[in-house]
Image 1 (cartoon, rainbow, N blue to C red):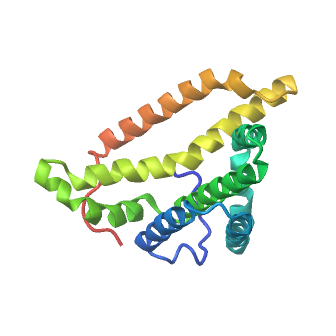
Image 2 (image 1 turned 180 degrees about the vertical axis):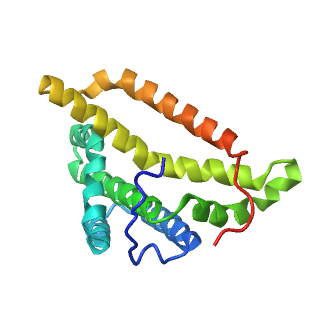
Length: 203
């Protein structure tokens, strides 16, 4: 589940997880109300520059977003049909930039560091009988799983293309669901073996 974590340390690794998550939330919320093409193009360019500053391994992870191209095609087709293809390009650029930023956070942040950053925010849950550490684990796993699922889809698609010479498309839905369920089952077994959400201070 942490296979997309960059083992080679970069300057982004040194930034605390809380600050990275806060910056991601702020940027995602701040750009949502705007439909400016120059603004979204600038955001996407800045995001790509961020990846370039993290090295070749980070740049290689951009390829994991190839399964999103059908979604982008649908968005552009829909907006073109409504007579506003520029808005479609704006939406596509904003979505691509925010997904890449989220992936940059996950690939430079350890799971335990992410949980440590999220847990204090969830401390009021104790009042209703929920363990903040357990909920923090669920949130961190959700964030971590997003780029991993992109990688899983791309792997299935490459395997299908190697056998047939064509892209898998909808034919991959069944094996993708099976692999996702297997992945979640393995994650649940690993957590059960470790006694659930880890506790205690970590360096």
